Each structure stands twice: as C-alpha cells, then as structure tokens.
Image 1 (cartoon, helix red, strand yellow):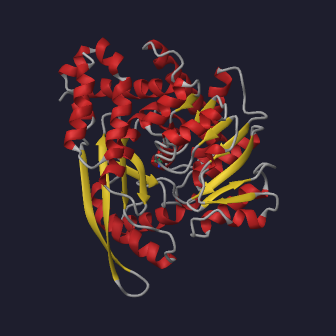
Image 2 (tube, rainbow, N blue to C red):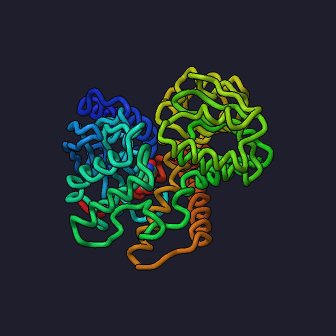
Length: 446
Ligand code: 2IT
C-alpha cells in the first residue's frame, strides 16, 4: 500500500521537472503519510494524493513597470492556489530574485498543511515575483506593487484568496498593493492581511510569526522536561520573523547570541536584548539586506563575514532566514555541538537529509509548517476582524496566538503517537495537517 506514496512522489518528480524545492517538500510530507495510507485505503481510491500535489490553479503573469531612470523593467509574477478544501486560499507573497514556479509551489504546498494545523478555515496558496527589493527606491517599490496587483486583483478576494507578506513583502508593500486593489474594485474589504493598523490591520500581526515560533519551541522543550529559561539560542536571519523570535525568546528567559544576513553572521555573547532587538528593525528598514552594522553599533559583538552561525554552540537552534539554509554539512555541525533541540522558523530551512541526520542523532526537530503557523493564524484573525467590521486588542490576539500554538504542538504530538511515530513532530505535523484536508476533500467529492 505504501507503494501508493512512492508512486505519487515519483509522479510529482515527473510532472514538475526542474523544481527541486517542490519535489523536496512533497517527498517529505508524503513519506510521513505512509501509515495513514495503510489505514485509509479509501484515500488511494479517491486519488487524494494525486489531487493534493496538483495545484487547483496556478497563474503566472507579466509585471511591467518603469524604474527611476525611466527604463522599462519586466518581472514575472505568480500565484498558486493550491488547495481550497477547507477555506479560501491563504498565504504570503514573496519578492526575491530567486523566485520561480518551484519556490512558489513548495511554499503553496507547505501552506496547505500549515493552515490546516491552525484549526482555522483557510486553504493553502502562495504568490510572488522575481523582483529584488534590495536597493530599490520607495517609488520603484510602489510602481512595482501597483503593476503586480493590476494583474493579480482579478484572481483574489476576501472569500477567494487572501494574500499577505513573506520575504521582501512587509507593511509598505502590502500598503501599496492594497491601495491599488481598493482603487480598482472600489471596495474596502479584507483581501490582504498584514495591513496597517489604521486601515484594518491587526494589532499583533507583526510579531505573530516569531512569537508563535517561540511558543511552539517552548512547548517542545516543556514536553521534554525543559524550558526556555537559561537556554542559549542561535537564530539566523534578521528580518521580521527573526525579530519576533529574538524578542519572545529573550522575554521567556532565553539568551539569543546570533543573528545573520546574506553578508555573514553576528555573534553577541552578551545576548541580543533591549535596544539591540530594536536595532534589528533599523537594519531591516535600511533596505540594504546586511547585518554587519550591528557589530559597529554594539561593541563586544563580532561579525563573521560570509559565514553562517551553525558552528556556534547552543542549546536551541532556530533558523529563520530562508529555505535550505541547513544542509547535511550544517546538520553535522549542529549535532557535533551536542544540542538536543532545533525549531524551524523559516519555511523549510532544513533539507530532508539534514532533518533525518539530526533526528537519527537525537535532536528533537520542530517543523516549520507547525512552528511558524502563528503568522497565518493571526492573518486569519485579521480576516475575521475585517469581516466583523471591528478591532481586536493586542491582548486578545496574543492570548489567542498562544492557545493556537500550544494546540498545534499537542495536535502534532498526538497524530505522531496515533500513527506509531512516538514523539516525532515532523511526522505529526504532516499527518495532523493532512487528515483535516483529506476529510474535507472526501466530503466534497471529486
Ligand atoms: O509563510 C507564511 O505562513 C506567511 N508568509 C504568512 C502567510 C499569511 O497569509 O499570513
């Protein structure tokens, strides 16, 4: 029966050549679904996996805009509406030079399970463009966002597909996209999340992803008789997700000693707290995508040019930069450091080989599709705030976020144990996320 899973993994490879990131996540998820397929032969009969790995809809479109020098620029935009069985498609938009269909499909596929894990009614989707915001002026970013939405607007809507931010897309970009959408459709509706607080945005959405990661990591630690208090933490990245992670880990008594950028990493043995956390926002807002200025600003910290922080010894590792930042060599360094815990922050930061190696060597791994689900969970609270024409308080949001994250941890643990994996959050997240979507697909027919 597990042949079914192997056949579908192969099918994905055959039908999506040249898209290794998408193939990677499909292989990772489907492999842990083997025992589910054994217990539920009806899923094979209904072609659930073949349907799951084929996006319901995918569009790519030309985005033409004029740069500050008056030159015409052309980028490629995407939106993959992967699975809408449990709610409107929901997922971020990524602007980065390496964006292509394989990246958006991997993110869209992951989003199905992540969104399902939140317990909220949202389907999976993702979008983006091969646009590099680094070094672009405000005017250029605005014109790009307007051109992007002039095409995308006809495919989205509050009950159809609700985009949000991701790498390269923050409050500024959401503002420009929302402004253009509103002008075209002449409706004020909750079609994007991560909006400004004065115009429908949710108090608490900005920090939601990072806070949620730390709630999840802490639940992992507590399930194993430990806690964040006194833990040394290595974090990568310095953007929105890293910022929220550093802030909450510090608040819970952890000591974060690294952040990183494409230029290298910062080691600050005194711990990144207080004004140092605020400075991360300045680094992000500089638009230069470098973390080196941290070392000039805070004496005692050190900048390691062109290096990643994985050789630094810590109790807990939280990669928050981008996909595939931990391959087998990095995994070996992390294991050699004698750590027991790694919680993924960014989407798919570890290769399948790296995860297997770490788990085989006793590291407890928290998977990103569970750990970083706090962002999209709060996006969904933003949708409900907009639909109810109301405003929620930060206290309401933070309390709900914490409950959701602890619920996700428990759902992962239970699903893993139910299907014979023991305490394996990676398998548990895939199974718990899958079961709800599969049931909805079965109910709704072919
Ligand atoms: O990866 C993600 O979950 C996001 N970029 C956020 C998605 C959302 O709709 O808030």
